Amino acid sequence: MRTAELAGVRNFRLIEEHTPSPAAGEAQVRVHAVGICGSDLHYYGEGSIGDTKCMYPMVLGHEPTGEILTTGAGVTGWQPGDRVILEPALYCYHCEFCLTGRHNVCSSIRFLSTPGEPGFFREVVTLPARNVMAMPQGLSYAEGTLFEPLAIVLHSMKFADPRPGDTAVVFGAGPIGLVTLSVLKMSGAGRTWVVEPVAHRRHMALELGADAVLDPGAEDVVKTLKRETGNRGFDVVIDCAAKGGSMNQCLYLARNGGRVVYTGIPSEAAVPLNLHEARRKELILYNVRRSNHETEMALRLLGDYPGRFAPVVTHGIGMGKIDSAFAMLEQYSDGAGKVAIIPSNSL
Image 1 (tube, helix red, strand yellow):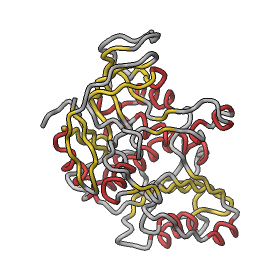
Image 2 (cartoon, one colour; image 1 turned 90 degrees about the horizontal axis):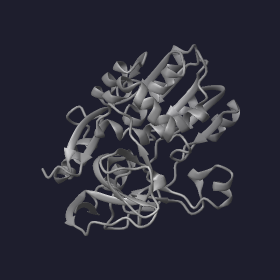
Image 3 (tube, rainbow, N blue to C red; image 1 turned 30 degrees about the horizontal axis):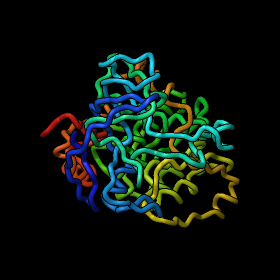
Image 4 (cartoon, rainbow, N blue to C red; image 1 turned 30 degrees about the vertical axis):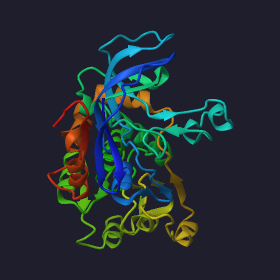
């Protein structure tokens, strides 16, 4: 089988590997699509995510969909050809955090696509059957890759706690930001602004329901947005970008006692925050660590409201052109939103 390895900064290579067979309790799956995540872009272009360095070679990709090929001993309920999504997180299930339902901060978590844990940019994978879930009917494999970012957004909503009529601002209109916008609107949030420097992404945000969009390269967004709220600030501020000073801008724009949620991952190993601004306002600050028991809800929403989320997926590109796909996202070219890699496509 073919696998795309990241061999260095901005350097993928295709290799041939032995096709793995499923052990007891595992499923063997042909991978049909894998969404490119912002964290994949950090590894690709920066050689790290914050203070976590790449270990080359490594296999990225953790938003996979595919079809069952076969199963190992003891696995029931699946047939060859079943369309599935693949949960990339492997938990220990017995540490204090797993036992209290905080699986996303499991002390022994293995997350496929991180250093030392190969991800899904490969044609065939095996993984525990508990990590396989049925994909909703009517979705393409590429659209189905949104299950993972949508689960993250649903997790962030537990912190953001949007209430009917709340004012909100989202920094970043990449895939996570666009899905965040959609879920805020579904949750009844009121007037919602999006801050995004890339023109085609601002347009996508408007198409998905943003009440207004701002270009941070063209105006002082803090000054403009404070004026828009009568200097009160926003009930909910969500940072899906974590760049260009957005993490502190969130603090300046939240109202007194407001909620600030950091979903995006900064490139820097350490980020200076103006905690005096947060202290004076008694802000509630949250960090998002992937998702935690939200995948089933994400799949239900994708199945029930495909038209709300599917427009985020703009490209499906064969694994043979994976370097070009990543370069396109780095350069914000060709109107790219969510890009899915198609491992079975040899182009």
